[in-house]
Amino acid sequence: MLTPDPMLLWTVALLFVPCVGKTGQLSLQVRPNPMFEGNSLTLKCQGRDNTLLSQVKFYKNGKFLHLSEDSQTLSMGIATVNSSGLYHCTGNMTHNRHVITGISKTVMVQVQELFPPPVLRATPSNKLLEGIPLTLKCQTKLHHRRPAQRLRFSFHKDSRPLQTRVLYPELHIRAAKEGDSGLYWCEAAPESGQIRKRSPQLEIRVRAPVSQPLLTLRPTGLAVGDVAELLCEAQSGSPPVLYSFYLNGEMLGNRVAPCGRAASLLFRVTSERDAGNYSCEAENSVSKETSKPGALSLDGLPVLSAPTSSNGLVLWLPASLLGLMVIAAALLGYFRPWRKTGPLPPQDLPPEAGGEQHLLNINFHCQNENDDGIIYSEVYTTPNENDAKPAKPAQKKKFCHLRRGEPAAP
Image 1: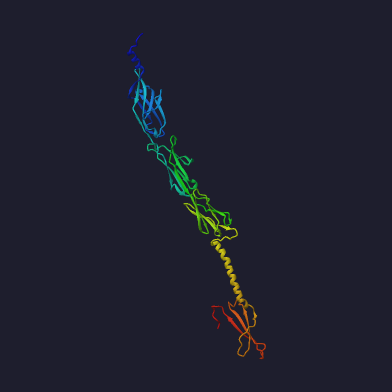
Image 2: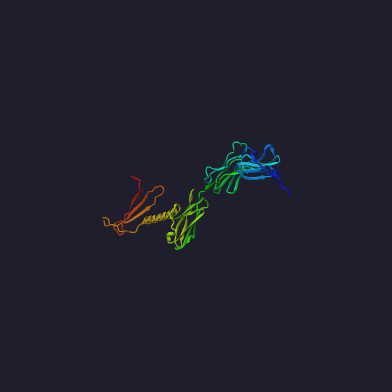
């Protein structure tokens, strides 16, 4: 049996076992240079004098990335800031029938930011009242070495797009409404659309004043011992809403509606004092409104309303008419015996010096247009029929009564 020559075995082993070469026998090329976000990142491992390589391996920050058996190029796709790092490669090359493994030098790859993430700004503020114009601006800036590139902007509210890929970085809302409240964000991207960056969310809060609330009384007719409900509701207004309840202007209590809409107040009727005019008031951080009053009556009892400008006038008119009727009745009772023309019933008068008694007749005449407030009266004295003396004509005395404040005629 033949014994193999040890030197021959070592020679054969050297032909098939690759030698580890020195660093620098390979070079790693990065394209393009400089590298910006959105560029296609390509790594190429080359041997000295363009020697063909096999079993090419690529590494990033000391960690294995990829093995290419028959290619010296590795496409890394679209570069991002996260693509930055330390790269090197290794590969096998044949020299004088010997396989040698070469190692490239480490190459620092720095991917520059094309533009920073945008920031969404609100003008005049992200908290405003209804009806005020609102402008949202997506703020960012291109790298000074890429001034020719253009960005496109998109605006979103919650998960709904408002504007997509426009050149102007602003969104205008002419008159903000409460429904415009929500979370807004914007997105910026180059025209190629290879990278997109979005802003943090910005909360927009539009506050709306409360509308005049509607008061509902349930039920309207009650008896002592029943339970009554006062329901106050403002159809619009930003929450939370504070509702206050009143009876004849005095507060009964209040309730808070965290989400707006309606609030109610329950109470048990204990006496007739619970009848009257009820109202409610709605208030939020913007405004305050009061409902129209509602009357609540107890069965068999009238509503004792607190006087207002309208029902005060209604109460005053009947009272005035009643007062005028009383005054007219008094005047009529006073003047009625004097309005009759003719003799008055006989009265006992004190006798005159001769022992004679006379009857007194008085006539009243109402003034005419020319009398201007003058009242004339005529007084007659009639002798007694039993008098033995010859009859004498009745003596007539005429008096002129002037209106108060006028001078007497001469």
